[in-house]
Image (cartoon, rainbow, N blue to C red):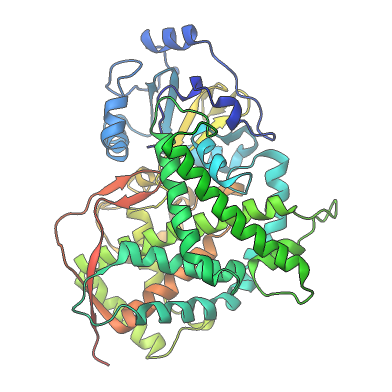
Length: 486
């Protein structure tokens, strides 16, 4: 849950502070409490129909994504509520979102929602701010340039083939929620480290899962004890972080000791130099970037594929169209980079899945200094929330928004849609650096699955999303992958 009650008053606020982040304006408890109790808000921005101060907490604890969506349907593009002493505003109009993420992006920083992530990931692209983030982005960008994507397809396809071969006959139930997590982690580890992580992938996967669970715990807990305190959760989290650090530090040290360069993301990051200063990444910065890429690069793609399979099984007409395209483009061979651009309907299926079930369903911003959201003042202490789940269902931008219809991304009207009406990877300068790699990976994996199997659900009951740090299925998605006739 992205709203931690009274998080501004926890004993760990100093532990969270980023060197590159502008200090947050502190409000006294008396001021915050009075602000909430008297119900003073931001101008004419409507308020959620809850009691002041802790009124929103019960709704957000039960089902935050449904609560926020229901308030959007009731109140519109811009509304506010308080969570303890914090004032939150949810922005859902693409025009205002573009202003925050692109037009005036230097006026905004990531809010306290990202602080638990920094405890686990260190100071990587996801959690850094200011000049440090600019430097990291410049150094990392060449590794994700489009011209490098061609070299990734072969590794993705071979890894996927090995993984799908292990699924066995179609009568066996396959928990794709689990299988895709394993597959996408193996893929991103191979792209990141080549063969260096092969024997450690399971350890890293278990550690990353523990770290993400810990982030979820801290975002939904009112009072947060410092990570150094020896609670069971803290000890598990520290052990998980330590295991990842040990493995990646060992690989980096081994790379320093050899002269023959490798052809992977780690090598590109190690050799990158800032064009202005000539400086590269330190070993600690390399480790933080690697952990960030591993976590962000497998969880979101795995969830996209799992939701995609669920939707295809529930829409056999869409599945048949997809099968015809894959058969026409690939036949029975492995996909190549040249094939990817021809898999247009496959891409539309993935985009439509990302529209309905964006893995990053919520992210937050906070003003660096007083600024504006359109004609609404935004003081430094304001928490601004953006939910792709809501934006992707905005009726002014999406016809029949609850309907799974991939064709909407192939129609000519798609070019006229506001660019910030579809933001599964964020938007503006701080959009996800690996979005093209993620889409490429999802396309190749989905095409190869459909190439060999038709998809049926074992359990056809409604599977509502569970909104945690990411948007996960409410229960495992278990399928029967029935071999297609050749």
